[in-house]
Amino acid sequence: MTTGKTVAFHTLGCKLNFSETSSISRLLEQDGFVKTEFEGQADVYVINTCSVTDNADKECRQLVRRIQRRAPGSMVVITGCYAQLKPEEIAGIEGVDLVLGAAEKFNIVDHLKTLTKGDSAKICSCDIEEVNTFHASYSLNDRTRTFLKVQDGCDYTCAFCTIPMARGKSRSDSVANVVKQATTLAGNGVKEIVLTGVNLGDFGKGFEGGKKREETFFELVQALDEVEGIERYRISSIEPNLLSNEIIEFVANSRKFMPHFHIPLQSGSNEILGLMRRRYRRELYAEKVAMIKQFMPHCSIGVDVIVGFPAETDERFQETYDFLHGLDVSYLHVFTYSERANTHALDIQPVIPVNVRNERNKMLRNLSHKKQSYFNEQYTGQTRKVLFEGHSKDGMMEGYTDNYIKVTTPHRQEWVNQLVDWELR
Image (cartoon, rainbow, N blue to C red; front, side, top):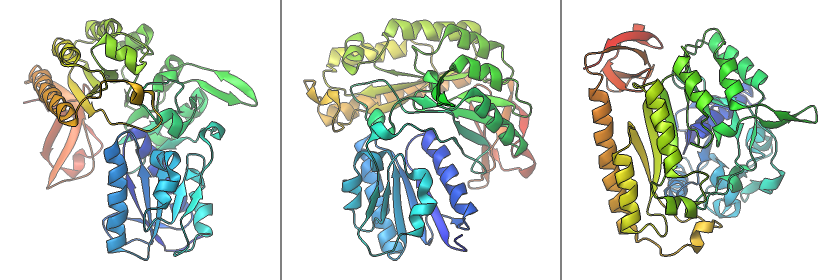
């Protein structure tokens, strides 16, 4: 066991990465490491990377340079998607000591025991085809809302995406084990669980006792609804073609699953959806939104959308803008298309100039602001329950209503991790 050494973490990317960072942190703390702030001095720095966009790659390199200036004698460990996709590139960054691929990130304790500062960077990675195990993860004590990983990997082949190359084939936990973890989290005082995965609706694939396991995401949400002590669940993101009508109806009638969906769209043009290799058309997306609003008029719906994908002409972008403008959704997460190595999108023409991509991003972010403001205004004067989070920033605390309206108020310790009746204004 390592005694007294300090370790600091920085996470780039998605909720799934946050859950895994938290689990890696617990492994190191069990080995005697003391967790400390990333901006301070630490014996070991761990960066859990994303590689969805070129900006995530750049941010990783910038973080390493900052550590080099602040603590040149410290160990630097890089893991996550960027580490799996480009281990040699990362190993070439001055100051990096250890690169852990998808299969090795949870073996970090063993790797650190044999690591010496000053040696050339050690790469511990394998071909992604060999990655087939599932490691359960969850965030704890980081925030009131806990991110619980229930699925990993993806079997889809979207033209813009490197995730299958970084995380491997779709695989998941069992319903029984997820329920067990939720029960453990309830015992730790957790009030809200956010279910996370790469392709959450694909939950159920895996092996148990050498036999193929066949379960469904619908079976999972039904089982979790019965767990005592957890008061709120959220579904972090689910593909529209995997969001079944029975899931929508179940959430509408559940006391614990919140009226809040996040559904990737990516484009409102059927031609672009086809080029992206998405598994639905805009008509299906509109049907899902309409059904959600029929059963839960107060439901918050978030949308992922990519601008500047190759062949997105002005007319096709306008299709997306008009489609989103007329859709009863609450907010948008807008991503500017970024070329990624070894993706099918690189073969699609014409390429959209970066300045045009940025302008389209700005237009959709402005639309998102209008959508969010309109959604929030509909509930002014209503009283809804808010779960307040523990962290304080400038003396203020934050929380969310059941339908994901953000509330900010002066910090009151007695409200931390409590559901408070709140009149929206």
